[in-house]
Length: 247
Image (cartoon, rainbow, N blue to C red; front, side):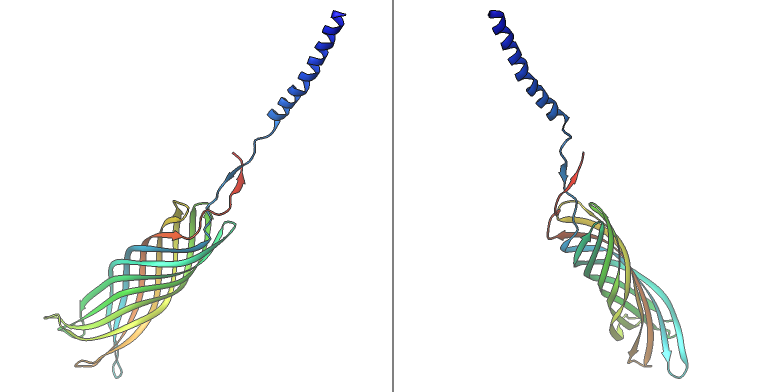
């Protein structure tokens, strides 16, 4: 009888242990669960500041209705830039599209003695630049490479000076509209913050001015501008929805 009871207990113990071992094996055999890793989302409104360097290239011609056009030559002037930008971007997969308005204070000035009128000098100064552009970019998570293009505007002052004394004899101001193209790289170093560098070229065309001095001057000035700026932006929003990624 004792042998029968001991055998029964042993069979019961084996029967209870087998399901537990099978359950342990099933748990161990399960694949690792996917880990949710956030990706950087460039969608949203942003505002920021920029600063850097600019160079304006100008060609100045005097225009006489009776005798024609006399070239005064071309000159380049460079200086500092500082300003801000505001815009909106939206991201579709890895493509990023945006609109942006940018305004900068500029200090681009050059003075040169006239080749045609000894004793007189001409001065060109650009003190403001604005850009209104669209963007198309490609993002690798926190890195964004983009191109941009649109309209540009510059604020300029053209002056005729007495070379000896530096006194301004006549001046004309002009707000010029043209086109702009550019390329930039931006990196998101925090959920809402990004830092970047951008290059822009502005095609400003020609403008005509009249100076009332003795004699009366009519001139034509062409202008191109190059800009290299460092930028920092704050975007209203965060990383966005996480996506599944295996590690």
